[in-house]
Length: 314
Image (cartoon, rainbow, N blue to C red; front, top):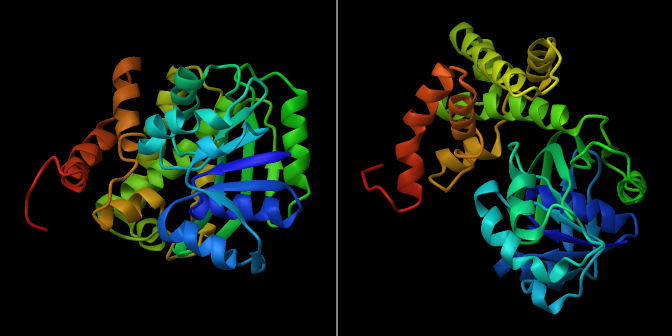
């Protein structure tokens, strides 16, 4: 398969690197020093599951120079999606499969609005990974997984083909869930509760889960998202919060989310696609989300400052 990785940071670099390592035909869309380093010395991946280097990288900063591909893995941040959808158009032909890997539950809708619903599926992934420097990805926690499904949840040959490609790659698990929306919301509950509490407390998961007060807040955050999901008729299991807390308890104590890291570093973040989405979707569904409302409005000034729309001292 010809696979384009649109956004080659911690997520796209890792999954694209594993696919290339397995022999798939991968082209990376990147820019700046990261692109230059990959072209000159390849893509270096440091991983708790084994380090590797992909040499002779096919990489570009201009999708218009690349013919339509079989699959586009979309691994930019959620706030970059509208521009990314327009920019990736040259990669997308009638038979192309576009797979979003963003945190949140609305990425497939945003991409379908620009590219058409026929080429877009829903997707999600999980791993703790960062771009450690130009041409370098560092995977530090959890066994990476990727999941995707058709928007109508029906089986399809095109997804089975993609699943086979991922199954040949080491260092990850792949699945086509029977209900992709339940899978999306389960991940949303996990990462949004964790990232929102982590950002407002400025603490890693080990602190948040161990302090009695912040642990109760973590439990409340998961309840609010669970109630919202059920109101939207998403079939989340009643045990999802208990199972997610067990996952939190098993994480490395220093673990943080990408949204949390971006907010604390003063960079634009996925606040609107995560914390803000809970508030907005809750309002639409008539579900109260008091904790998320507090966290969202507490963090919003930092988000606006990072985007140059508000100015105050650090």
